[in-house]
Image (cartoon, rainbow, N blue to C red):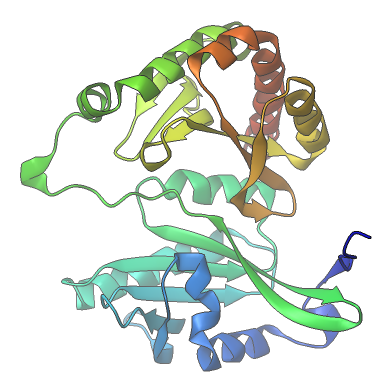
Amino acid sequence: MADVVPVTIVREIRECGFDEAWLQDYIWDNPSCLAACFRVDGLEGVMKERSQEGGGRLDLLLKDPDDETMYEVEVTLDETNADHIIRTIEYWDRERRKWPKRKHIAVLVAESITARFFNVIHLMSWAIPIVAVQANIVEANGQKSLNFTRVLDTYEEPEEPGDRENPEVVWRRDHPEVVELAETLLDVVRPVVGPSRLKFLGGYLYIGLWKHGSPYFWFRKSKGAELRLWLHDQFLNKGADILKKAGMAYKPAPETKKDNRSFLVDVDKPTIESKAEAFRALAELVKSSYQRYHDAEDK
């Protein structure tokens, strides 16, 4: 008989009788609860409610004891808005000026990141080391557990100025097989997504529209032939059905949130060419997913 896996229910933190101050205290008392979100062994608290020049207080300042990386953490249970993002980045910038020889990462811990501001953080994270972490309470068999999930982290540490090369040159020289995959995929999906191009970054290569530059499909340098694509929850089941019917192996990316998900798909050139219709169908869904966010931004 197959093992029975308990069904979990996601609860709002306030619904369970806790508030923002409780969440902040919990992280301060147990800083390593966020360690898995940053792929480190452990974290230590440096300061809580740290006063900032010019006003305001940084909720939490944490550090990795192994390499002294510092994490400027803002905590909110309110729906994410522009003030939360701006404050997170401002505090990060002030702390990195005080500790210029250390690596700094801005962290926004929130229960809900709205569609509009998820996209804003996503765009900023290509240039600023900002990580979004979703906090919620999960209940299974009557037992409640606090859960943290990294929902966004696309930043790649820049190379030293003296060692910089054109990213496209580096990709074509060091990873020609991945570039060939991306070019093959671009040819397949261009009739669906419209005028588009390959965008080469330090750690990423993606297909995006000329207008917005949104990463419709992308490859990560460290993952080789692993294709990533993002879908809004409205199209999640349709995307999974397309992949299943095409016989393509896939899995959810670790960065997830309740209204979107990235899929990871192992691909090669013959797969892309032989399953072109499936990739064009996925492109329609990805395009519609991003359109929802751009429409939200314009309102």
